[in-house]
Image 1 (cartoon, rainbow, N blue to C red):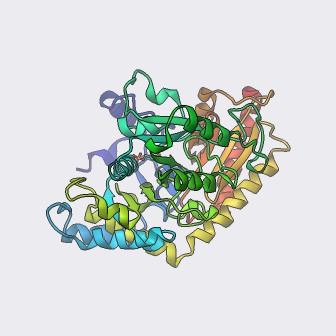
Image 2 (spheres, protein in one colour):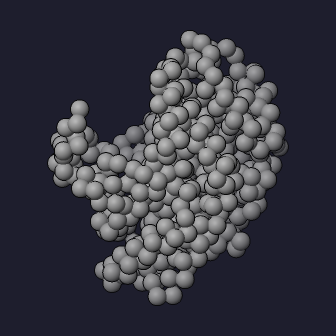
Image 3 (spheres, rainbow, N blue to C red):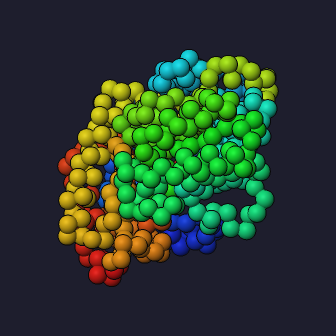
Length: 442
Ligand SMILES: Cc1ncc(COP(=O)(O)O)c(C=O)c1O
């Protein structure tokens, strides 16, 4: 059992490459052996600032002693029972807790637990279609909703995800997300407050020419596009979607898989715009590092969903629920939402200040501890995807782990326990690496 402990990082990586498909892309050549707080360590004991946090997941950091204890306690009690077989306290407590955190009137709704963000997204679509009896779904370019064939049909951030996969879930039309830095309508390099607003006309046109409003089951949207580039939309975007749904009888689905559970400084990002969706898809952080997804929806919608309409063997696994509940308790006790706002703003300020001497940084954007640092060449064009991946590999070697978002941005989504001092140390390393690569990347 201890054999792995004696592997070097190189040995581990070679063994992995021999048996694991290359379809799983690795941003770094780091062997993740141990985690503690905001750090992970490799087989040689090297320490890395984890600005990826298991891809925007480990909100209270790695192996938090309270989360570890909650997992162990539940594992000793009941590892798995399946919600179809009977009732389990961690399951109901998790749904109750998520509802309590949700904005009104969704907090009066009901929920169902799944295993992942993608499963939550597909469940949300299934619910919307089942209850409205309508077939069409509007989704956005620059959006990411997952990789399985149903969720992939909604994802619009890169054609690479769809390569050779022609016939996905039908009945989905995509319209442009307000991407004010790389505007689909030719007005680039803007911030959301100067948005051209063409996205609104495009939706209108789509409803006139392509999707009859009577057929529209749902609009699915990320309140802040995650994988697509940490794009914060203009203030009128989500309210406009709410209005369209109210007018057409369609349901508004917020995909809060990445933005949810405090990452942006509110429990759910829709709260920044005072918009309440009819259905919300959740994942990532809610399982405290274990696989857990959830869908919350208006009570009337959930109650109209007939018995046995949906299911999942592992969905709402009690160990994952306990890990998630403990994570939420820690977040509440330690005021981690406020920390996400303060440290996130500090990180953005640091990168903006660096733009004066580092023209490689084209734009810094995001909200809370979702921060994107968009990299451009001398003519202001995005550096190539391969170049961003190289930058991230260099950062890994320098002791900072992260992934990318959009075509050319570094994605910082650290644990929400990150202190300002720790953030400064990580930003110093990132700026040092960017400075050393600046000439090469022009
Ligand atoms: C907004 C959003 N939705 C859905 C997903 C899919 O979640 P999972 O990878 O857990 O299936 C992701 C994953 O990155 C996401 O960011």
